[in-house]
Length: 247
Image 1 (cartoon, rainbow, N blue to C red):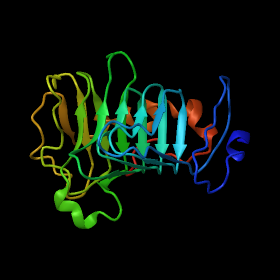
Image 2 (image 1 turned 90 degrees about the horizontal axis):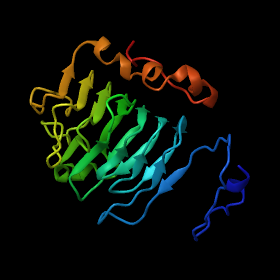
Image 3 (image 1 turned 120 degrees about the horizontal axis):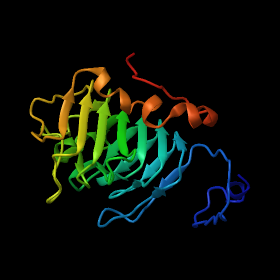
Image 4 (image 1 turned 30 degrees about the vertical axis):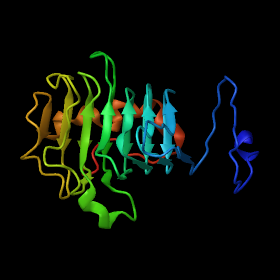
């Protein structure tokens, strides 16, 4: 906290904080992370490879590859994430709960690019009770948007979208392929979503994709089971729901 406190308020210049290696138990609230490089190339705003990290009411601003949830257990609650191509990506075991994923122009939107590499490793992204839509102020430009929930960065890519609002910018097929990446062993599930982009009758016909109707089939992707909430989340004082929102 001392490092944050030294930063000038409303400065017009960049201010760098270098944190030395060590163990820090801190709580910093309402942070905005931004990469202002624009949409022409990859520009990461945040990379997190810490274990048991939690973000509450933070904002992540970027275009391509905004948030790199690289490894470890992560939890994001009531955060706003802006981007275009693969703007949430990586191989962490991550739950986004009650967040807004805001898409921006001009590129084709892929919200998620998950990169699970090991079948025996806990890795995947869970989008729970989130809103996937256009960025505020861009509602009139909706006809220009073409969006997909995600695409597989690896053959074992794991993304579970549950109890979320999917706007009409989501294409009927829902998901986008990625080169020669196999879709046989990935895990792409949708469960209890709503909104004009939620119907699954025209979704991709991949072996690894399923529109789920029974809660027990996705219960392992809730906070309680997927990121072992009892071990660490209560100590963060961040609100969270252990199971399904609708339970």
